[in-house]
Length: 285
Length: 289
Image 1 (cartoon, helix red, strand yellow):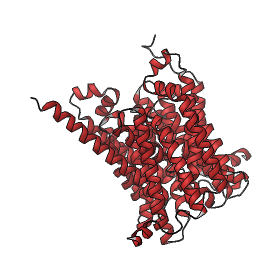
Image 2: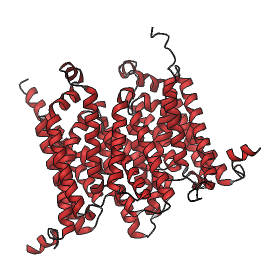
Image 3: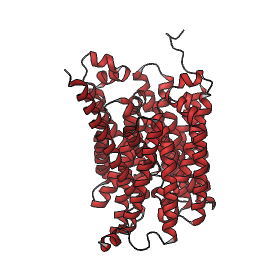
Image 4: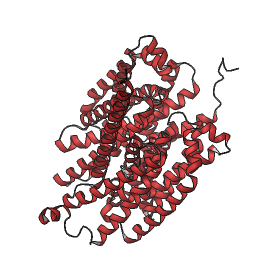
């Protein structure tokens, strides 16, 4: 029996410094991403959630070119993209602005990578994440920023929820929709700059969308949905770290698969519940 | 003639790579622009973008088993597109299900690329799939690419009226007896072909550009759908040709002398033309007064 445990929890899983950093930063990211993801799904803006971290990748390439900190480049690009999407939201039809902003950022990223004339492993690590390579200072920064982000979400929770579900009503209650759009954009951007170094640009949004969607199927209240979503996200990254450490499979793949499984299970449960309710309703006849 | 040499660097039309790039680029541009008009009208920009991404998963898989990338792109796109279509019964769910399927496929792509690096030490595959280069397209692909373009355009022509009707009003289409789900599935196939082709040429990350940009500009400035498609196709062609020309010229530009990426030029020209077109006032609607 002890053998089995040792096989699952390989030695060093909780003691190596780089793994401790991984545990902390992954947990922080797994708590904030579903919080933001809840609003992303509520507003039907998966595309924005996908585009911002992806385009921010170009920022890392730019930073690499001029020799700046890649996280800084990431944040600058993420903020610029999110703000331009937030401002032009009114003129946009059906994700056109999002798509155009994204391709422009990616085109620049392509240019920076080509001009840099190097195969930059550091930049490509940002595509797929480098959870096991997060440094102590990065862990610190990620943790602090996550706490800040959670507090901000707590403050804007009610107006943001209202403006995301019933915009007309929110406007009538004196909530500025433009301000809320921009707040949402900034939240997505901050979340992206925290998540990308950990799980990578390609999958930063899998932590936002999957768990939050699963939570939406399971719970009946916004708080419940967020709770379920955070639980799913935490479970996914924790299991992913353990399996990833045992097998050296890419973390991004594991996180994405686990949150897909959670989504499918949640949807099945939701369907089963609906059928049962329907039967209860029909049976007196 | 001096200025002309600056505009088009010597040897432009003689180079085989340029000829292939011009032919394939034109086919891709026209198909993407025409399909793109419907993509925007139907509000499927995210799906269109996602198809390019999931295609890259297929391409990574193809690289792993050693078949041509284009077939990998197509398979990835068709599988994921069908999955999204099945999962999103109600339109409200579409954004989220697209996101979930996309993230699952991206995860798979991370796995494939990891396996590729385990099997061989080629590191360039990632960059190639994600960014691509029109000058590196194999000459033998001209015929299959043309074929794909024709099939995609034929599909659009085939379902043109029911597609238009169900795009404008789903309820009207249903009450007229249009099989809405079948039409949307056929459109999905056409869209997949257009996107995957462009993903091969422009790179998976940028395949969205030709799909959305020209169509978005054209929709703003035309009133009849036929003209919209014509204008979109024209703009896309112009973008692509300019992009190829500038990229060819850029071999002589600083800092490296190995050329700037074509995709960068195409995207820049496209986004600039979209922004410029926003400044021009829209044509007045006759009914709007």
